[in-house]
Length: 498
Image (cartoon, rainbow, N blue to C red):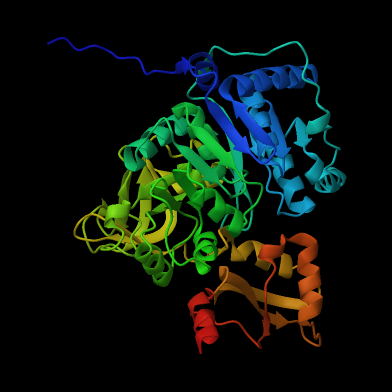
């Protein structure tokens, strides 16, 4: 036997170019505004890329995008890929101040926005110093010039997606083309794949879940169906019409979809991929009673969506489980003796594999804390059962998941702490039938001050997205702490249950 040194594969043919060449008439995108084939999508991407190059965008530049229309966002995503620029999707539910901090951190070269996001884009630019270069997407001209690439480099960064951190500071997760490729391969092995697949995305495309479907559909050569916002009636109608084979939703969405139904969906719907937060047992039982093929998953931005997924055939006997690791992923528990997949050991969930991000943008401190010895430390607590199924016990100790959106208490607390009438504050999640959880705040007023709930609500709305604003304020004399001074959030949650 001879030993051979095998060089890693770093470059592969461009995904969109390949689909436009080999499957030019296959529908790539179906949206309320129209349908585009792979040839039409590729032509648009190359021509918009030329327009962006004229504006000065080049390889490696970070370009922020705020687009409320999904098809518009998709065009810009693919145009920036042809330029080998890095897309920075911005969450239009956030405030201009929050977005300005993200844009500054990523050192974006240009802000692209569509007509629906124009007011927010202008507010963002006023908060950003110096002012950003801005272009409304609808006003970009598709010139006769084209920018095309033959290959893509797997190790290069494709996107920076900001995810709130436990310190209250947003962190930019750097997603590479390699993350996308291996995520697509693992998802296909877990969920299956058909050339006729149509994947419905009724969630915002600025989330990693929405972006993943856009990219995976191009890799597979299948069709992505975009809804501009979630409407349960529109989603149900689309599923009942046939053609849709997969759909990505969070528990709140599925709950609304099932509320007014007396039965399941056509057999053409083979997968309802459920993520975002743990699903209530009652919701899963209702969905399974209707024969809805629910595949509950566990993942996050840092794992480029799925890390584990529960097959629908196991859903009835493993209610509450997030399933088993995807084929190219390792998932362990940080036990007393180190990483383990032994049954019954509770601890922090560790993830390793080619879908895990390269790290956080400009955050060596966070990278050192979260990426150690080949593992990503999720901060979530979980346990494996005797058959190797993962059960997530707590969606991070402090994290509040409200309608699929992450709310970190520290971020809200840092805003409240700056109010002149507040001494200290603690934020926890309160169960909610509609949103799963909503944030509420326990507040200690400064001596002699008497802040009101209305006052603090309006104050928070100035700095925070609406879903992050506490839905109730409880005024207390002191916050519960242990002997070392650590805040006892569990004690606050128990007060809510009393």
